[in-house]
Length: 112
Image 1 (cartoon, rainbow, N blue to C red):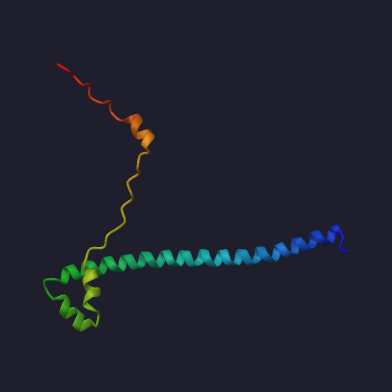
Image 2: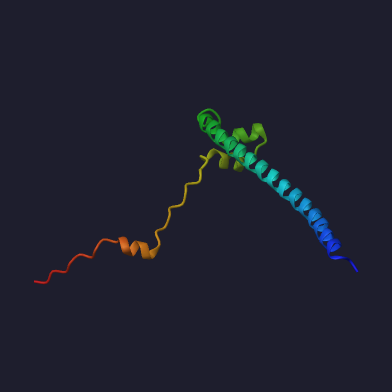
């Protein structure tokens, strides 16, 4: 039978191996998330630049001709020609209880 000290050392060793695996996975996910964020920002910049370039070219060449010359499908060019919308922050809703506390008083009813 294992002694108390041996049991403690076995648990520490098992935890160490698991901790190393967890740390490796966390590092990989963190690196991928940073890469994803950078690529998403780059893609947004590219879409914005494409939208501006298509807007500048609209009086010079049609999307149909651009599609023919570039082998880029016209539906892709059409979607890129639309201005890139950035996300607006959502409006914060006031909790009902707070809104009721801050609501103006009801007008007084005047009876003749």
